[in-house]
Image (tube, rainbow, N blue to C red; front, top):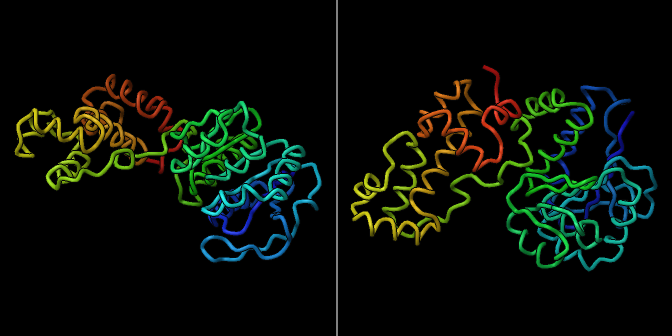
Length: 322
């Protein structure tokens, strides 16, 4: 059965929030055929050209009040202009009405704000771009906001993190509809991650940690990330930084927000993630090359940081076959 996807856009929307999922659904349809694939329809408050934040105009053939049911998936995009549209009662009322006609309701990036304004996230877990998470939580206290997820499914409502995470969301929807094999096929064709699980963090080690003000600490941070299998103990790092252990630990924690040991563990977990994505190394070799030593330590640390077992992570979205 063909699945109908209705995407809601507005002036200043994020272009990739629409085109990323659209390409996923379009390629999936090419593979499985139109009768089993997806039909994407784009709607806005008023029909016609709608200009994205990057200046590219997109045609919305339908006004929101012209859309009738049934709808398989309602997709609400985000963008820097999304907060300014929260006061647009036609837009919010249109989203609310269409949600009632849809089997699934979804948002990309800070499109979650629009779902929140429509009351569609009350009592649910949701995610959004990490820069918007606090705003979402402050505006809609009935929503349980998790800023560290790629996407979250709570019942029939799906929300995703920023921009490119909309591709992950669309791949997850395809996997739900047609199985993981098709989602992997689509991901490989688009040259993107093979379906990152929703529980994966939005952040790499570098993104999660402020850049130190001190140049020696910045250089040391780069060294840690590039050499996970080296001796990265506090004494070794303090010597490399030319500081006493006590002064080094205090300064590093003050400027990065985490202790040296915590940063090293995060960095090694990130290195292990990359090895699992891009190599076919057995887990004991991944553990050694990422500086975690043994497979048992790899399993424990990986679960703590990425909330998934190393083997499952690799099976779900390894970037190439070896």
